[in-house]
Length: 569
Image (cartoon, rainbow, N blue to C red; front, top):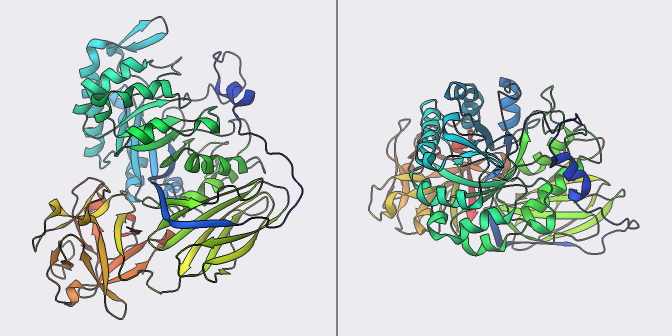
Protein backbone atom coordinates (compact mmCIF):
# COMPACT_ATOMS: atom_id res chain seq x y z
CA UNK A 1 0.00 0.00 0.00
CA UNK A 2 1.01 3.64 -0.36
CA UNK A 3 1.75 6.05 2.45
CA UNK A 4 -0.58 9.04 2.76
CA UNK A 5 -2.33 8.98 -0.61
CA UNK A 6 -5.19 6.74 0.53
CA UNK A 7 -5.49 8.20 4.03
CA UNK A 8 -7.50 11.28 3.08
CA UNK A 9 -10.10 12.36 0.56
CA UNK A 10 -7.69 14.69 -1.21
CA UNK A 11 -8.13 15.06 -4.93
CA UNK A 12 -5.85 13.22 -7.30
CA UNK A 13 -6.37 9.68 -6.04
CA UNK A 14 -6.15 6.95 -8.65
CA UNK A 15 -9.35 5.58 -10.14
CA UNK A 16 -8.90 2.35 -8.17
CA UNK A 17 -8.77 3.70 -4.64
CA UNK A 18 -8.89 1.55 -1.53
CA UNK A 19 -11.20 3.89 0.31
CA UNK A 20 -13.73 3.99 -2.54
CA UNK A 21 -13.32 0.24 -2.96
CA UNK A 22 -14.11 -0.37 0.69
CA UNK A 23 -16.95 2.12 0.71
CA UNK A 24 -18.68 0.59 -2.31
CA UNK A 25 -19.24 -2.91 -1.14
CA UNK A 26 -16.06 -4.25 0.42
CA UNK A 27 -17.24 -4.03 4.00
CA UNK A 28 -18.35 -7.22 5.68
CA UNK A 29 -22.06 -7.91 5.25
CA UNK A 30 -24.33 -6.06 7.66
CA UNK A 31 -26.00 -8.56 9.92
CA UNK A 32 -29.78 -8.58 10.11
CA UNK A 33 -31.17 -7.10 13.31
CA UNK A 34 -32.63 -9.79 15.54
CA UNK A 35 -34.52 -9.60 18.78
CA UNK A 36 -32.59 -10.10 22.02
CA UNK A 37 -32.21 -13.76 22.94
CA UNK A 38 -30.53 -15.87 25.58
CA UNK A 39 -28.55 -18.99 24.70
CA UNK A 40 -30.54 -20.75 21.99
CA UNK A 41 -27.53 -22.81 20.98
CA UNK A 42 -24.12 -23.28 22.54
CA UNK A 43 -20.51 -23.50 21.48
CA UNK A 44 -18.67 -26.79 21.25
CA UNK A 45 -14.87 -26.68 21.18
CA UNK A 46 -13.03 -29.79 20.03
CA UNK A 47 -9.29 -29.47 20.81
CA UNK A 48 -8.59 -32.70 18.93
CA UNK A 49 -9.94 -31.27 15.65
CA UNK A 50 -6.91 -29.20 14.69
CA UNK A 51 -6.69 -26.70 11.86
CA UNK A 52 -3.86 -24.28 10.98
CA UNK A 53 -0.85 -23.46 13.19
CA UNK A 54 -0.77 -19.76 14.03
CA UNK A 55 2.43 -17.88 13.21
CA UNK A 56 1.36 -14.59 14.76
CA UNK A 57 -0.12 -11.13 14.45
CA UNK A 58 1.56 -7.83 13.75
CA UNK A 59 1.94 -4.79 11.55
CA UNK A 60 4.14 -2.49 9.49
CA UNK A 61 6.86 -0.02 10.43
CA UNK A 62 7.99 2.39 7.69
CA UNK A 63 10.44 5.06 8.78
CA UNK A 64 10.41 7.02 5.50
CA UNK A 65 6.66 7.51 5.05
CA UNK A 66 6.03 8.04 8.79
CA UNK A 67 8.40 8.33 11.74
CA UNK A 68 9.92 5.33 13.48
CA UNK A 69 8.36 3.80 16.58
CA UNK A 70 9.88 5.12 19.78
CA UNK A 71 11.59 2.78 22.23
CA UNK A 72 8.49 2.73 24.45
CA UNK A 73 6.22 2.14 21.46
CA UNK A 74 8.31 -0.84 20.35
CA UNK A 75 7.75 -2.45 23.73
CA UNK A 76 4.03 -1.66 23.60
CA UNK A 77 3.77 -3.23 20.16
CA UNK A 78 5.80 -6.39 20.73
CA UNK A 79 5.47 -7.01 24.46
CA UNK A 80 2.69 -9.38 25.50
CA UNK A 81 1.87 -8.10 28.99
CA UNK A 82 -0.91 -5.81 30.25
CA UNK A 83 -1.13 -2.61 28.22
CA UNK A 84 0.75 -4.18 25.30
CA UNK A 85 -0.42 -5.45 21.93
CA UNK A 86 1.38 -8.80 21.94
CA UNK A 87 2.41 -8.52 18.29
CA UNK A 88 4.76 -11.27 17.18
CA UNK A 89 5.44 -10.20 13.57
CA UNK A 90 7.01 -7.01 12.22
CA UNK A 91 6.80 -6.13 8.53
CA UNK A 92 9.18 -3.56 7.08
CA UNK A 93 10.04 -2.22 3.61
CA UNK A 94 12.98 -3.15 1.41
CA UNK A 95 14.04 0.25 0.09
CA UNK A 96 15.50 0.41 -3.39
CA UNK A 97 18.19 2.71 -1.96
CA UNK A 98 20.46 0.76 0.44
CA UNK A 99 21.40 3.98 2.26
CA UNK A 100 17.94 3.89 3.83
CA UNK A 101 18.15 0.35 5.18
CA UNK A 102 19.71 1.42 8.46
CA UNK A 103 16.58 3.37 9.42
CA UNK A 104 14.61 0.19 9.97
CA UNK A 105 17.15 -1.56 12.18
CA UNK A 106 16.32 -0.23 15.66
CA UNK A 107 12.68 -1.30 15.69
CA UNK A 108 13.44 -4.60 13.94
CA UNK A 109 16.18 -5.44 16.40
CA UNK A 110 13.93 -4.72 19.39
CA UNK A 111 11.14 -6.77 17.86
CA UNK A 112 13.56 -9.69 17.52
CA UNK A 113 14.66 -9.24 21.14
CA UNK A 114 11.01 -9.47 22.22
CA UNK A 115 10.56 -12.67 20.24
CA UNK A 116 8.93 -11.39 17.05
CA UNK A 117 9.49 -12.59 13.51
CA UNK A 118 10.52 -9.95 10.95
CA UNK A 119 9.55 -10.00 7.29
CA UNK A 120 10.23 -7.46 4.55
CA UNK A 121 8.49 -6.35 1.35
CA UNK A 122 9.89 -4.27 -1.55
CA UNK A 123 7.87 -1.61 -3.36
CA UNK A 124 10.45 -1.05 -6.13
CA UNK A 125 13.72 -2.54 -7.37
CA UNK A 126 16.68 -0.15 -7.76
CA UNK A 127 15.98 2.37 -10.51
CA UNK A 128 18.49 0.95 -12.98
CA UNK A 129 16.64 -2.39 -12.95
CA UNK A 130 13.24 -1.10 -14.11
CA UNK A 131 11.74 0.08 -17.38
CA UNK A 132 8.56 1.88 -18.40
CA UNK A 133 5.77 0.05 -20.19
CA UNK A 134 2.08 0.64 -20.92
CA UNK A 135 0.90 0.01 -17.33
CA UNK A 136 3.66 1.94 -15.59
CA UNK A 137 7.01 0.36 -14.73
CA UNK A 138 8.26 -3.17 -14.39
CA UNK A 139 11.43 -5.07 -13.55
CA UNK A 140 13.47 -5.61 -16.71
CA UNK A 141 13.49 -9.27 -17.63
CA UNK A 142 17.26 -9.27 -17.95
CA UNK A 143 17.54 -7.97 -14.37
CA UNK A 144 15.86 -10.86 -12.54
CA UNK A 145 19.16 -12.28 -11.33
CA UNK A 146 20.41 -8.87 -10.23
CA UNK A 147 17.15 -8.28 -8.36
CA UNK A 148 17.52 -11.57 -6.50
CA UNK A 149 21.00 -10.45 -5.44
CA UNK A 150 19.53 -7.12 -4.28
CA UNK A 151 17.06 -8.97 -2.03
CA UNK A 152 19.89 -11.15 -0.70
CA UNK A 153 21.98 -8.06 -0.01
CA UNK A 154 19.15 -6.70 2.14
CA UNK A 155 18.81 -10.01 3.98
CA UNK A 156 22.56 -10.11 4.65
CA UNK A 157 22.64 -6.49 5.79
CA UNK A 158 19.86 -7.09 8.29
CA UNK A 159 21.54 -10.27 9.56
CA UNK A 160 24.74 -8.31 10.16
CA UNK A 161 22.64 -5.84 12.20
CA UNK A 162 21.20 -8.61 14.37
CA UNK A 163 17.93 -9.02 12.45
CA UNK A 164 17.44 -12.48 10.95
CA UNK A 165 14.60 -12.14 8.46
CA UNK A 166 11.91 -14.80 8.66
CA UNK A 167 10.99 -14.11 5.05
CA UNK A 168 11.21 -11.63 2.18
CA UNK A 169 8.59 -10.77 -0.42
CA UNK A 170 9.19 -10.57 -4.15
CA UNK A 171 6.92 -7.52 -4.52
CA UNK A 172 4.34 -5.60 -2.52
CA UNK A 173 0.97 -5.56 -4.33
CA UNK A 174 2.14 -6.25 -7.89
CA UNK A 175 -1.47 -5.89 -9.10
CA UNK A 176 -2.03 -2.42 -7.53
CA UNK A 177 1.12 -0.71 -8.66
CA UNK A 178 0.08 2.73 -9.88
CA UNK A 179 2.96 4.20 -7.87
CA UNK A 180 5.33 1.25 -7.74
CA UNK A 181 6.35 -1.78 -9.77
CA UNK A 182 3.90 -3.97 -11.69
CA UNK A 183 4.30 -7.70 -12.13
CA UNK A 184 2.08 -10.01 -14.15
CA UNK A 185 1.27 -13.50 -12.94
CA UNK A 186 3.57 -14.87 -15.64
CA UNK A 187 6.45 -12.64 -14.54
CA UNK A 188 6.04 -13.62 -10.88
CA UNK A 189 5.91 -17.29 -11.79
CA UNK A 190 9.01 -16.96 -13.96
CA UNK A 191 10.97 -15.17 -11.22
CA UNK A 192 9.97 -17.75 -8.62
CA UNK A 193 10.80 -20.64 -10.92
CA UNK A 194 14.13 -19.40 -12.22
CA UNK A 195 15.55 -17.13 -9.51
CA UNK A 196 13.82 -17.45 -6.11
CA UNK A 197 15.75 -20.61 -5.36
CA UNK A 198 18.82 -18.44 -4.82
CA UNK A 199 17.16 -16.31 -2.12
CA UNK A 200 18.64 -16.88 1.32
CA UNK A 201 15.50 -16.65 3.45
CA UNK A 202 11.87 -17.74 3.08
CA UNK A 203 10.20 -16.43 -0.05
CA UNK A 204 6.85 -14.62 0.16
CA UNK A 205 4.57 -14.03 -2.86
CA UNK A 206 2.46 -12.70 -4.46
CA UNK A 207 0.97 -10.22 -1.91
CA UNK A 208 -1.96 -9.36 -4.20
CA UNK A 209 -3.75 -6.29 -2.86
CA UNK A 210 -7.12 -8.05 -2.96
CA UNK A 211 -6.15 -11.73 -2.62
CA UNK A 212 -6.77 -12.20 -6.32
CA UNK A 213 -6.26 -15.86 -7.04
CA UNK A 214 -5.42 -15.24 -10.71
CA UNK A 215 -2.05 -13.99 -9.46
CA UNK A 216 -1.29 -16.98 -7.23
CA UNK A 217 -2.98 -19.83 -9.10
CA UNK A 218 -0.26 -19.96 -11.79
CA UNK A 219 2.42 -20.15 -9.08
CA UNK A 220 0.75 -23.06 -7.32
CA UNK A 221 0.13 -24.79 -10.65
CA UNK A 222 3.80 -24.54 -11.67
CA UNK A 223 5.67 -27.18 -9.68
CA UNK A 224 9.08 -25.53 -10.09
CA UNK A 225 7.85 -22.07 -9.09
CA UNK A 226 5.80 -23.46 -6.23
CA UNK A 227 8.82 -25.35 -4.91
CA UNK A 228 10.56 -22.00 -4.29
CA UNK A 229 7.56 -20.41 -2.53
CA UNK A 230 7.52 -20.67 1.26
CA UNK A 231 4.76 -18.25 2.28
CA UNK A 232 1.75 -17.33 0.19
CA UNK A 233 1.11 -13.73 1.18
CA UNK A 234 -2.15 -11.86 0.57
CA UNK A 235 -3.74 -8.49 1.30
CA UNK A 236 -7.45 -8.18 1.98
CA UNK A 237 -8.38 -4.73 0.69
CA UNK A 238 -12.00 -5.02 -0.38
CA UNK A 239 -11.89 -8.82 -0.43
CA UNK A 240 -15.29 -10.29 0.38
CA UNK A 241 -15.39 -13.00 3.07
CA UNK A 242 -16.76 -15.43 0.50
CA UNK A 243 -13.39 -15.10 -1.26
CA UNK A 244 -11.28 -15.79 1.84
CA UNK A 245 -11.15 -19.59 1.36
CA UNK A 246 -8.54 -20.87 -1.09
CA UNK A 247 -9.20 -24.50 -2.07
CA UNK A 248 -6.24 -24.65 -4.47
CA UNK A 249 -3.84 -23.66 -1.69
CA UNK A 250 -5.32 -26.36 0.55
CA UNK A 251 -4.72 -28.86 -2.27
CA UNK A 252 -1.27 -27.76 -3.43
CA UNK A 253 0.18 -25.70 -0.62
CA UNK A 254 1.42 -28.53 1.57
CA UNK A 255 4.45 -27.44 3.56
CA UNK A 256 3.81 -23.75 2.84
CA UNK A 257 2.44 -21.06 5.11
CA UNK A 258 -0.56 -18.82 4.36
CA UNK A 259 -0.25 -15.26 5.67
CA UNK A 260 -2.41 -12.17 5.46
CA UNK A 261 0.41 -9.64 5.26
CA UNK A 262 -1.44 -6.30 5.08
CA UNK A 263 -4.79 -4.65 5.64
CA UNK A 264 -6.49 -1.80 7.39
CA UNK A 265 -10.15 -2.41 8.07
CA UNK A 266 -12.82 -1.16 7.64
CA UNK A 267 -11.26 2.14 6.50
CA UNK A 268 -8.50 4.67 7.13
CA UNK A 269 -10.86 7.59 7.78
CA UNK A 270 -12.40 6.69 11.15
CA UNK A 271 -10.63 7.27 14.43
CA UNK A 272 -9.43 3.91 15.75
CA UNK A 273 -11.32 4.44 19.03
CA UNK A 274 -14.74 4.86 17.38
CA UNK A 275 -17.09 2.31 18.93
CA UNK A 276 -18.76 -0.02 18.00
CA UNK A 277 -17.11 0.40 14.58
CA UNK A 278 -13.79 -0.81 16.01
CA UNK A 279 -15.46 -4.16 16.70
CA UNK A 280 -15.42 -4.74 12.93
CA UNK A 281 -11.68 -5.39 13.33
CA UNK A 282 -12.33 -8.30 15.68
CA UNK A 283 -14.81 -9.81 13.23
CA UNK A 284 -12.34 -9.35 10.37
CA UNK A 285 -9.59 -11.18 12.26
CA UNK A 286 -12.07 -13.93 13.11
CA UNK A 287 -13.06 -14.37 9.47
CA UNK A 288 -9.43 -14.36 8.34
CA UNK A 289 -8.60 -17.12 10.84
CA UNK A 290 -11.75 -19.23 10.42
CA UNK A 291 -12.91 -18.66 6.84
CA UNK A 292 -9.50 -17.94 5.31
CA UNK A 293 -7.45 -20.26 7.52
CA UNK A 294 -4.65 -17.69 7.53
CA UNK A 295 -1.75 -18.35 9.88
CA UNK A 296 -0.82 -14.69 10.32
CA UNK A 297 -2.72 -11.39 10.32
CA UNK A 298 -0.81 -8.13 9.82
CA UNK A 299 -2.15 -4.58 9.96
CA UNK A 300 -0.74 -1.71 7.90
CA UNK A 301 0.97 0.99 10.02
CA UNK A 302 1.28 -0.13 13.63
CA UNK A 303 1.03 3.48 14.86
CA UNK A 304 -1.56 5.61 13.12
CA UNK A 305 -4.78 7.42 14.02
CA UNK A 306 -6.75 4.57 12.43
CA UNK A 307 -4.41 1.79 13.56
CA UNK A 308 -3.83 -0.49 16.54
CA UNK A 309 -1.63 2.10 18.26
CA UNK A 310 -2.65 5.74 18.46
CA UNK A 311 -0.21 8.55 17.65
CA UNK A 312 0.34 9.01 21.39
CA UNK A 313 1.56 5.41 21.70
CA UNK A 314 -1.53 4.10 23.50
CA UNK A 315 -3.50 1.09 22.32
CA UNK A 316 -6.65 2.02 20.41
CA UNK A 317 -9.97 0.18 20.42
CA UNK A 318 -9.03 -1.32 17.07
CA UNK A 319 -5.77 -2.41 18.64
CA UNK A 320 -7.57 -3.93 21.61
CA UNK A 321 -9.60 -6.05 19.19
CA UNK A 322 -6.38 -7.34 17.65
CA UNK A 323 -4.82 -7.89 21.07
CA UNK A 324 -7.70 -10.18 22.06
CA UNK A 325 -6.05 -12.53 19.57
CA UNK A 326 -2.38 -11.49 19.56
CA UNK A 327 -1.78 -11.44 23.32
CA UNK A 328 -3.31 -14.83 23.95
CA UNK A 329 -3.08 -16.77 20.67
CA UNK A 330 0.68 -16.98 20.47
CA UNK A 331 2.93 -18.39 17.73
CA UNK A 332 2.60 -22.16 17.80
CA UNK A 333 -1.01 -22.18 18.95
CA UNK A 334 -3.22 -24.29 16.71
CA UNK A 335 -6.72 -23.28 15.73
CA UNK A 336 -9.22 -25.98 16.66
CA UNK A 337 -12.77 -26.63 15.62
CA UNK A 338 -15.43 -24.56 17.41
CA UNK A 339 -18.99 -23.52 16.69
CA UNK A 340 -18.22 -20.37 14.72
CA UNK A 341 -21.70 -18.80 14.54
CA UNK A 342 -23.75 -20.02 17.53
CA UNK A 343 -26.19 -17.11 17.20
CA UNK A 344 -26.83 -14.23 14.85
CA UNK A 345 -24.21 -11.54 15.45
CA UNK A 346 -21.94 -13.83 17.50
CA UNK A 347 -18.56 -15.10 16.22
CA UNK A 348 -16.41 -17.67 18.05
CA UNK A 349 -12.99 -19.17 17.34
CA UNK A 350 -10.78 -21.38 19.49
CA UNK A 351 -7.08 -22.24 19.70
CA UNK A 352 -4.96 -24.76 21.58
CA UNK A 353 -1.46 -24.93 22.95
CA UNK A 354 -0.83 -28.17 24.76
CA UNK A 355 -3.68 -28.51 27.24
CA UNK A 356 -4.51 -24.79 27.21
CA UNK A 357 -7.51 -23.62 25.21
CA UNK A 358 -8.09 -20.00 24.14
CA UNK A 359 -11.56 -18.94 23.00
CA UNK A 360 -12.29 -15.56 21.38
CA UNK A 361 -15.99 -14.61 21.30
CA UNK A 362 -17.39 -11.51 19.58
CA UNK A 363 -20.92 -10.23 20.18
CA UNK A 364 -21.91 -7.56 17.67
CA UNK A 365 -25.49 -7.35 18.91
CA UNK A 366 -26.58 -4.31 20.91
CA UNK A 367 -27.78 -6.61 23.67
CA UNK A 368 -25.99 -9.11 25.87
CA UNK A 369 -26.06 -12.79 24.95
CA UNK A 370 -26.04 -15.77 27.32
CA UNK A 371 -23.91 -18.51 25.84
CA UNK A 372 -22.83 -21.97 26.96
CA UNK A 373 -19.44 -23.42 26.06
CA UNK A 374 -18.45 -27.09 26.09
CA UNK A 375 -14.80 -28.06 25.67
CA UNK A 376 -14.18 -31.70 24.90
CA UNK A 377 -11.42 -33.67 26.63
CA UNK A 378 -10.25 -30.95 28.99
CA UNK A 379 -9.30 -30.98 32.67
CA UNK A 380 -9.73 -27.21 33.00
CA UNK A 381 -11.28 -26.08 36.26
CA UNK A 382 -11.91 -22.48 35.20
CA UNK A 383 -11.48 -19.95 32.43
CA UNK A 384 -10.06 -16.47 32.85
CA UNK A 385 -11.83 -13.82 30.72
CA UNK A 386 -10.72 -10.45 29.31
CA UNK A 387 -13.26 -8.08 27.75
CA UNK A 388 -13.33 -5.00 25.51
CA UNK A 389 -16.51 -2.98 24.97
CA UNK A 390 -17.47 0.69 24.82
CA UNK A 391 -16.20 1.35 28.35
CA UNK A 392 -13.44 -1.24 28.83
CA UNK A 393 -10.32 -2.31 26.98
CA UNK A 394 -8.81 -5.74 27.65
CA UNK A 395 -10.12 -5.63 31.19
CA UNK A 396 -9.62 -8.86 33.16
CA UNK A 397 -12.77 -10.26 34.77
CA UNK A 398 -13.34 -12.76 37.54
CA UNK A 399 -12.59 -16.37 36.65
CA UNK A 400 -15.51 -18.58 35.62
CA UNK A 401 -15.74 -22.12 36.93
CA UNK A 402 -15.68 -25.04 34.49
CA UNK A 403 -17.51 -28.27 35.28
CA UNK A 404 -16.99 -31.34 33.11
CA UNK A 405 -15.59 -29.10 30.39
CA UNK A 406 -18.57 -26.72 30.35
CA UNK A 407 -19.29 -23.17 31.45
CA UNK A 408 -21.95 -20.55 30.76
CA UNK A 409 -21.38 -16.84 30.60
CA UNK A 410 -22.90 -13.62 29.32
CA UNK A 411 -21.26 -11.75 26.46
CA UNK A 412 -21.92 -8.01 26.89
CA UNK A 413 -23.54 -6.21 23.99
CA UNK A 414 -21.08 -5.04 21.34
CA UNK A 415 -18.05 -6.66 22.93
CA UNK A 416 -15.15 -9.02 22.35
CA UNK A 417 -14.08 -11.46 25.07
CA UNK A 418 -11.11 -13.82 25.29
CA UNK A 419 -11.31 -16.85 27.60
CA UNK A 420 -8.17 -18.77 28.61
CA UNK A 421 -8.37 -22.09 30.43
CA UNK A 422 -6.55 -22.66 33.70
CA UNK A 423 -5.79 -26.34 34.19
CA UNK A 424 -6.45 -28.32 37.38
CA UNK A 425 -2.86 -29.50 37.55
CA UNK A 426 -0.52 -26.83 38.88
CA UNK A 427 2.30 -27.48 36.42
CA UNK A 428 0.04 -27.68 33.37
CA UNK A 429 1.61 -30.74 31.69
CA UNK A 430 0.20 -34.22 31.38
CA UNK A 431 2.06 -37.51 31.49
CA UNK A 432 1.38 -40.11 28.84
CA UNK A 433 0.93 -37.39 26.18
CA UNK A 434 3.40 -36.38 23.46
CA UNK A 435 4.01 -32.68 22.88
CA UNK A 436 5.89 -30.42 20.55
CA UNK A 437 7.75 -27.63 22.37
CA UNK A 438 7.36 -24.56 20.13
CA UNK A 439 9.59 -21.57 20.90
CA UNK A 440 7.57 -18.36 21.05
CA UNK A 441 10.16 -16.08 19.43
CA UNK A 442 10.62 -18.23 16.33
CA UNK A 443 7.58 -20.49 16.01
CA UNK A 444 10.01 -23.41 15.68
CA UNK A 445 9.99 -26.67 17.57
CA UNK A 446 12.54 -28.24 19.88
CA UNK A 447 14.18 -30.95 17.78
CA UNK A 448 16.82 -33.63 18.28
CA UNK A 449 19.47 -32.75 15.72
CA UNK A 450 19.39 -34.81 12.50
CA UNK A 451 16.84 -37.18 14.05
CA UNK A 452 19.73 -38.92 15.76
CA UNK A 453 18.96 -41.75 18.16
CA UNK A 454 22.44 -41.63 19.66
CA UNK A 455 23.23 -40.48 23.18
CA UNK A 456 24.76 -37.01 23.11
CA UNK A 457 22.75 -35.66 20.17
CA UNK A 458 22.01 -31.98 20.73
CA UNK A 459 18.67 -30.24 21.21
CA UNK A 460 18.11 -27.59 18.53
CA UNK A 461 15.14 -25.74 17.05
CA UNK A 462 13.73 -26.55 13.62
CA UNK A 463 10.66 -25.70 11.55
CA UNK A 464 7.65 -27.62 12.82
CA UNK A 465 7.13 -30.94 11.09
CA UNK A 466 5.65 -34.35 11.82
CA UNK A 467 8.94 -35.96 12.87
CA UNK A 468 8.95 -37.92 16.11
CA UNK A 469 12.27 -36.24 16.98
CA UNK A 470 10.11 -33.16 17.67
CA UNK A 471 7.78 -35.06 20.01
CA UNK A 472 8.44 -35.33 23.73
CA UNK A 473 6.79 -37.02 26.69
CA UNK A 474 6.91 -35.77 30.28
CA UNK A 475 7.85 -38.50 32.76
CA UNK A 476 7.23 -37.63 36.41
CA UNK A 477 10.28 -37.50 38.66
CA UNK A 478 8.37 -36.47 41.77
CA UNK A 479 7.35 -33.08 43.08
CA UNK A 480 7.35 -30.43 40.37
CA UNK A 481 9.94 -32.11 38.14
CA UNK A 482 9.80 -34.23 35.00
CA UNK A 483 12.17 -35.94 32.60
CA UNK A 484 11.52 -34.95 28.98
CA UNK A 485 11.72 -38.07 26.79
CA UNK A 486 12.21 -37.94 23.02
CA UNK A 487 9.68 -40.12 21.26
CA UNK A 488 11.98 -41.31 18.45
CA UNK A 489 14.88 -42.40 20.66
CA UNK A 490 13.50 -43.04 24.14
CA UNK A 491 16.32 -40.88 25.56
CA UNK A 492 15.74 -37.92 27.88
CA UNK A 493 16.95 -34.33 27.81
CA UNK A 494 19.93 -33.55 30.03
CA UNK A 495 21.82 -30.34 30.80
CA UNK A 496 25.52 -31.01 30.25
CA UNK A 497 26.60 -29.20 33.43
CA UNK A 498 25.58 -26.23 35.57
CA UNK A 499 27.14 -23.52 33.41
CA UNK A 500 25.17 -20.91 31.49
CA UNK A 501 25.19 -21.69 27.79
CA UNK A 502 25.79 -25.40 28.20
CA UNK A 503 24.28 -27.75 25.63
CA UNK A 504 21.16 -29.78 26.24
CA UNK A 505 21.52 -33.29 24.82
CA UNK A 506 19.62 -36.56 24.90
CA UNK A 507 20.97 -39.25 27.21
CA UNK A 508 19.87 -42.58 28.70
CA UNK A 509 17.31 -42.10 31.48
CA UNK A 510 18.95 -42.22 34.92
CA UNK A 511 16.58 -39.75 36.65
CA UNK A 512 19.59 -37.65 37.64
CA UNK A 513 18.85 -34.08 38.70
CA UNK A 514 20.48 -32.87 35.47
CA UNK A 515 17.64 -34.66 33.64
CA UNK A 516 14.83 -33.17 35.71
CA UNK A 517 12.96 -30.11 34.46
CA UNK A 518 10.34 -27.99 36.21
CA UNK A 519 7.59 -26.48 33.98
CA UNK A 520 6.96 -22.83 34.91
CA UNK A 521 3.81 -21.16 33.59
CA UNK A 522 4.41 -18.02 31.52
CA UNK A 523 2.19 -15.53 29.70
CA UNK A 524 -0.25 -16.75 27.09
CA UNK A 525 -0.32 -20.33 28.37
CA UNK A 526 3.34 -20.93 27.54
CA UNK A 527 6.00 -22.56 29.72
CA UNK A 528 9.64 -22.23 30.55
CA UNK A 529 11.58 -25.30 31.72
CA UNK A 530 14.06 -24.96 34.60
CA UNK A 531 16.71 -27.59 35.21
CA UNK A 532 16.80 -28.96 38.75
CA UNK A 533 20.58 -29.20 39.05
CA UNK A 534 21.56 -25.90 37.47
CA UNK A 535 18.50 -23.74 38.12
CA UNK A 536 18.83 -22.51 34.51
CA UNK A 537 16.11 -22.45 31.86
CA UNK A 538 15.96 -23.93 28.37
CA UNK A 539 16.96 -21.09 26.06
CA UNK A 540 17.27 -20.77 22.27
CA UNK A 541 20.80 -19.46 21.88
CA UNK A 542 21.08 -15.71 21.22
CA UNK A 543 17.34 -15.48 20.42
CA UNK A 544 18.08 -16.96 16.99
CA UNK A 545 15.16 -17.64 14.68
CA UNK A 546 17.22 -19.86 12.37
CA UNK A 547 16.70 -23.55 11.76
CA UNK A 548 19.43 -25.44 13.59
CA UNK A 549 19.94 -22.90 16.38
CA UNK A 550 20.95 -24.77 19.49
CA UNK A 551 18.84 -24.87 22.63
CA UNK A 552 21.03 -24.48 25.69
CA UNK A 553 20.40 -23.29 29.26
CA UNK A 554 20.54 -19.76 30.62
CA UNK A 555 19.41 -17.73 33.60
CA UNK A 556 15.57 -17.65 33.63
CA UNK A 557 14.33 -14.39 32.08
CA UNK A 558 10.84 -15.16 30.80
CA UNK A 559 11.99 -14.03 27.34
CA UNK A 560 10.20 -15.45 24.33
CA UNK A 561 13.26 -17.55 23.48
CA UNK A 562 12.73 -19.30 26.84
CA UNK A 563 8.97 -19.67 26.46
CA UNK A 564 7.56 -22.73 24.75
CA UNK A 565 4.01 -23.58 23.74
CA UNK A 566 3.03 -27.20 24.29
CA UNK A 567 1.31 -28.66 21.23
CA UNK A 568 -0.25 -32.03 21.90
CA UNK A 569 0.32 -34.52 19.07
